Length: 363
Image (cartoon, rainbow, N blue to C red; front, side):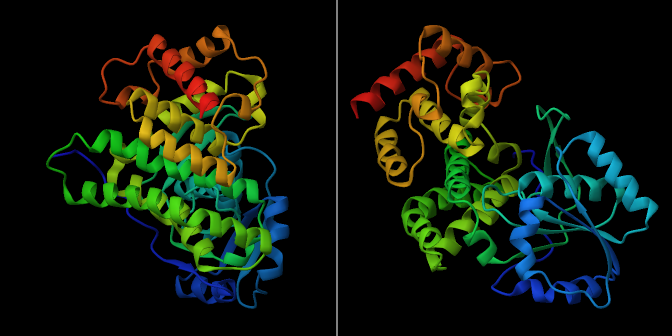
């Protein structure tokens, strides 16, 4: 039997137009009378038209402009303790939500999350990605308790930049490919792992079938069922894959390829989910799944995800470039090594990337 820990869901989750009008009552029902609201500048501008006026809750707002770093976690946690706040509310994208979860874990205070982007599953998971103050990746922290409350106003997400939603689709699509490569070899799955594997498949199927219509909703600024299905796939289903699957439902080669691409400064302007989407193609090449690659290339073209290194902003693609990506990708600590496909070497990754680039060119 697999040795896994289940972190299934927040205590309460609601997606509904106008739901933020219920925020004060939701806080009072939890005995939370004094809160710190942490938000980004752009995220607060997006949320303000929907934000309620509190009549019985004391609050202070803090606009955060830095990283989700240990220094910032410590500083804001001290503010929570010094002012005896009952809870912390996070309004923003992944970094703000991760910061709030980290502060809540440090102070043992509940967190309330209001995502303003559908670019990742941060609102669902009891996990934070921690960076140093320069913005370089430091570590993942997994917390023993989940978020108390997640409220989603879909009209906020509808008005968010479309490229961030597309990147979120790419990142969430990887949930299936990175989970399946690990789980398909486990013959007698436990119930939690079966749930994880099923929700990972749902991520893929929902995104392939509903993304184009969801993106039309964003372009037309008209909420539709496909848009809601896609954002819930990114936030809820994406979070459930790792929540029930633990290490088997998290990252594999696609995210390692992402990390490998970051050695090229030209890719720094590409979004996380865009680099992960390319990483999926390379992972499938390592698995020799070319029919699936062909299916994804058509999907990528339709919604605007990159399928080549050139589309990620790299102008000069030579052997040295590909080798530098491959060396970083195959670092001993990278998740690519969880794949049960034999030894993963620099040479294997180089060959996979070269084959993908030629395949895409000829596609």
